[in-house]
Image 1: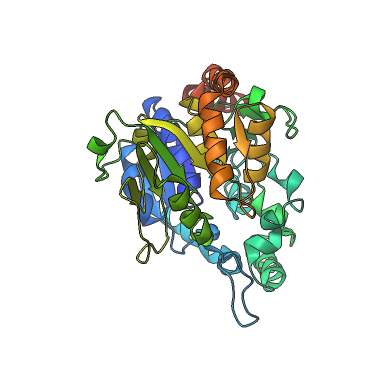
Image 2 (image 1 turned 90 degrees about the vertical axis):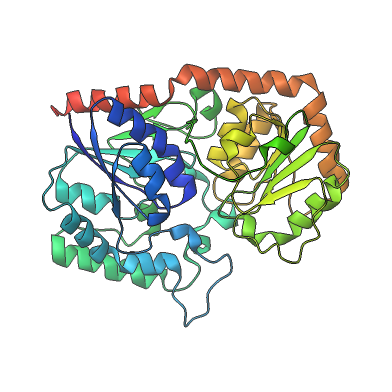
Length: 399
């Protein structure tokens, strides 16, 4: 048995893919101490880990989508400025523990100092597509300025770097990319080699383990009885970008008010109080996606890594509406493989959206290409393969 320190970025997109990994580690006898925010306490503990709460709010993806004023400090700059305090808090909460290795979300901002202080091997969990740094700058919404949201980022990086140098005697870069892209001694990529080919490059430390498909046993009040024996269209724009594209929801209503079935739409963090919602729509702030997909005939997705992987693994045809980060590259890859149609949100109209949905549902080639990807996902080995790779690292490091 080994003691594992798990440091997550406390957002749905980064925590949810790791729940199955934690469960598998615990089944194999590992003792996991998992840091996140209170919102994820229950699911982390259900997976068998010991939960710890960060002292600070470390959800960097709350950053505003419009530049902040010169008087404001963005969430990501605030988090970086709190770096030495965050590290000190983690060390304080675990002062009576000794860890054998560290698992962290790839963009966890303080992964490098924590690994250096503890002097233990690291495993990076890539819930965004590996190689995101290769296309940062090609997509403006994925640029460092987009994540920072203000002009204070450079000053925050310099101050935090100096604090880590003064307190821990370590050099930290003042380049934002060096903080948000943290390669581990082992890097778990939640996709298959078949899907990843031609998008980026990987060395031998990157291991393809397939998508993070895991039954999280979520207890969410949802009218599943309305879905029985109906043609279900599922719409989700994720938990980061969806609230910043309100015009899309009106397009969805106009496009599918006459849908011959039920439309389930996730509208996370969106003010729906003024909406006139068609009778055939079920709109929720949070949707138990895994369960809804069991009923779903076709979907519309922002093409985030987790949502896209869920759809492909369940062999559900879909239309992609990418908005930023790794989504444009992922949407392009699914289209290149003949598994999806990608539409531009800036020129989206009800007619071309309906046509695209009809095409992916009715043309057999889309279903055949989706099945090829799904088969490659299953062959990748899943969480069992991920833990096997971690155990190989343990052997290599005499843990």
